[in-house]
Amino acid sequence: MCATQTNLQPSKDDDTISAPKKIDTLVNMCDCIIRYSMKKEYLVDRLAKLKEKCDKGQPNDGSKKRKHNGEEGSREKGSRDSMKN
Image (cartoon, rainbow, N blue to C red; front, side, top):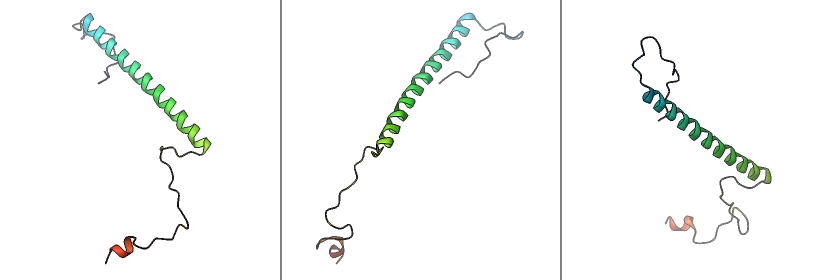
């Protein structure tokens, strides 16, 4: 989890914090920033790809629309209606 502490300046009462502890805090903060920027780049790239698909008129979820043979409302004999009996 990312560190939320941003105050790295020691206060008068906080003289007991050691340099290694401050370094660990800085390293954790840098890791969080790197992870955030990588995730942001991925999301921006993904959004751009989805926008391209939408501009081309393709479905954005990767699914294909079903093609109907004949009229939409017609059903063949032996469909669900006859199975109910």
